[in-house]
Image (cartoon, rainbow, N blue to C red; front, side, top):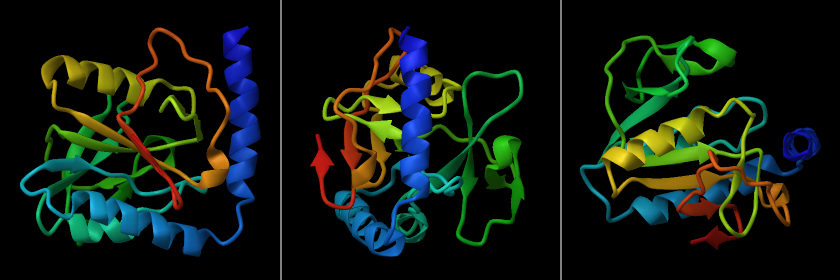
Length: 185
């Protein structure tokens, strides 16, 4: 039953995300909040993402965070449940990876200590609903076992908030969620 609930919620919130108006205004507000969070953080390894499928765009903040931190992007590798991360530079040549996700052409593996995670939906308890592949959950679980200081930050539009996201034993709650108007800590 729980999986059906997630599938129904996923379909509902993907449609909501697809139809959100004023994306640019919301993205500007969200990027300001991300930059404010990272303004005093230096020498960290931050995993961002290049938005696809109507995800909220964090590219503007990534181009500024990279000035004081190392940035990387996730890569889904066929046959591997955990994501790989490769260094990203503003001028990195990009190619299309699995699921049409842009990835750096040049592979420079690195392990982040901050992960900015796109959302399909979320709740106030910082539970996240993703696309259903479990890649971020498996990756976060693995990295948390090896780095107790790992920080995870979900990003999404306000309209993606749900009263309650179904939670299963393999799901990994986030440390923080940032939307254009709110921060859940």
